[in-house]
Length: 401
Image (cartoon, rainbow, N blue to C red):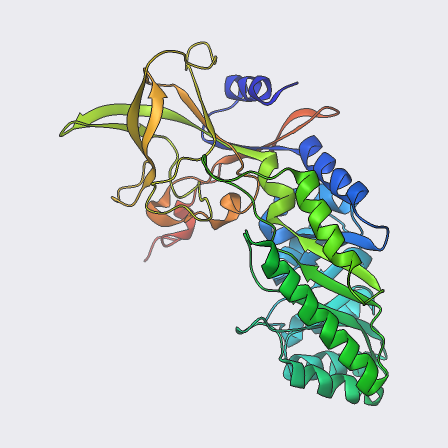
């Protein structure tokens, strides 16, 4: 079933606005990338990109990256095995680490973001008689990770911590990297550091976890590159490294973005001072494109008739699409080309499988959180989260006496 047909089914059954995530698309993208990579390269899904895809990711991937107690709680609720989890995060709470060690023993992998964090993990593991696996995170020049000197120090003194098994390094510098030479430079830096650790301290890393931050073209007129071409180039770069251990590619946006849509309706149409406006029942509290600048860029979208749910055909006019929030900032797209827009028409914004579902300013003005739908050929259309009233979080729960 094609995407538009799935959306028609969803609009007929559920109120807008909603997100629709195609689980088959997500799994296919994972399997395609896996097939294009060398055997020593595995994928890790960063669930911050879209935690609703965590269960599906766990079913077909060896590892999931978790960056907060809340994300870990989601994995626990889904009964995702601890062996699949890399517990990351710039701040790891002592009480949470104690709980996890007590409940799951030495299972899983833990990133180390600082010398203090290393000591915390070492002390808790020693107290419980555990041996745990860690990855030392190399900083990219910000608050995350440690610099080369600190990593050298930990590797030099690693035998002082028998409760810690240092598997290797972890590195992530950012997202939406359009230039190939940026990734090449990062891999060269990591290759050099791994070689230095081997030559100076006799340390041979077993694995390197690397977040390439591959580019997703969200907007029309942006350069598109096929998945096969992008992954082929990355695979060539990885193969040229002197490091021959296992490589784990941490991906979030690149795996999830193409597998979701955001659906909203036109609920008001007007013209102010010659400018056409459409108000939708969603808004910037739900829709967030990385790289959007003052709503000037046009994302990939569909405009469907509210009556027939067929694509509208005819002459297009520029319409500034605004959401339902009472702020002039709630502009989704300026001068979006729409064909004879009518009330209750449906707008489908594509490539929203990553981040929009969690990055929106949901609590602003106490608007409801949208519904979440899944689609798969096996299970069909599923409602996995109903709309949620946010006003409970924005006011006193009990009446004052």
